[in-house]
Image (cartoon, rainbow, N blue to C red):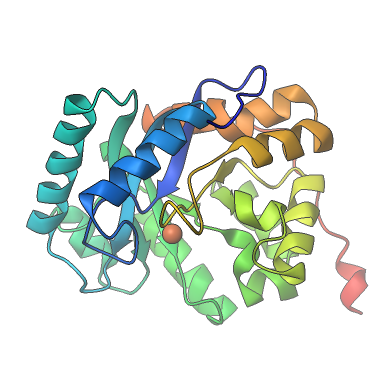
Length: 260
Ligand SMILES: [Fe+2]
């Protein structure tokens, strides 16, 4: 069992692919339960089950069936982990309509929407999508911001998004170097600019990209003040699933002249 680190026993993991058999996450109910046990042993109280939405991989009925099945099995197996509904929504211009008709889901029925883009998306398209969500009354939570080429090239945009009310989520694996140097450098850079609101696992399985949070807690324990660590792992995720405003340290802008 993973050793708990002091102070982080209230984590809420806002980005997981724990529902069995509907996307590229947990392949079976057994794998999902193993992930749930790992999360709970890490000090995670709850996870949002954010399967890849808007990819055509499953219907909304299949999502809710998998959600119900996992909820019941968590209870039956006495695993102390709560589930929240949600999706990691791949952005296109139909998202607003699909959110309105209930075929795509916000995080726990709040205004917060976990969104992702193609890793090489054009920056103007990203801004177009963010504006569309904002105008429709949603708050975008940008999934694994550090992994996008447009963020690595134009990190100053992240400051603008934050100033406009977007939420920035970074994967724990990026902080720990699991995705590569560019992603790790970007995650650290965003962290040092106070431009991260949430750290989540983006867990896909009990073997690779797991929901274990211990190493991330230890890393953040060294890298940032305890209050900031708590915001990233517990407090902001709690506020988001409750539909409350997020909190943060004052964001620091990037110096634009580094590109000139
Ligand atoms: Fe994901």
